[in-house]
Image (cartoon, rainbow, N blue to C red; front, side):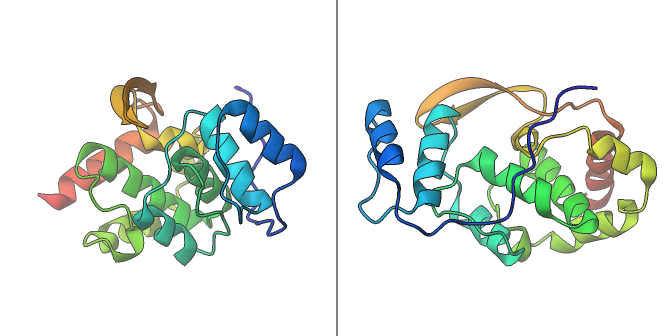
Amino acid sequence: MRDKREKIPNKIDTRPASTMQKSYAKQLGVILPIEATESDAKAIIARELDNDERVTEGFLNYARSKGMLCSDYIGNKALHNQLFDNLEVEDKTSFFCFCIYKFYFDGSNEDLSTHPKKALFEEFGEKFAKDVYFQASLEEYLGEELVAFGKSKKVINGVEKTIYGGSAYTRAHKEAYNYIKDNIY
């Protein structure tokens, strides 16, 4: 079994950014907004260190509709981790299906709560939330691996990079991909 990262709690720190955070950001060449909170500073610094891109407004709206507490500056991978760590099983399963859809079929709308195919993802979540084999396969993923699957190219902060996403050879991936393919055409 591979090592797992620590689960990201669903909380936010609204205290002003610490002197230590400001100093570290300056060393990294990152400018923090004057009104930055501790969570804002942590998110901005983490984006820089993780080579992560800022999350889209649609994805941030979806996360907040699911009760996620996060900085406006959170990175895309970081928010995928937070959602994947904190969603209930059925929502997590629907979210996984949505991520498969975004990657392979159409990534233009990142707000699952208003997505035209929302019912499809929710049906998938209902169907597979109690499937123990599917859930065991799903638990092998980290949230940040749902940004992409396999090896692909992506423009991150204006630079094309090769990224390595989650496995495309798991039961969870195959079930979600086939479900979408069988139900959208």
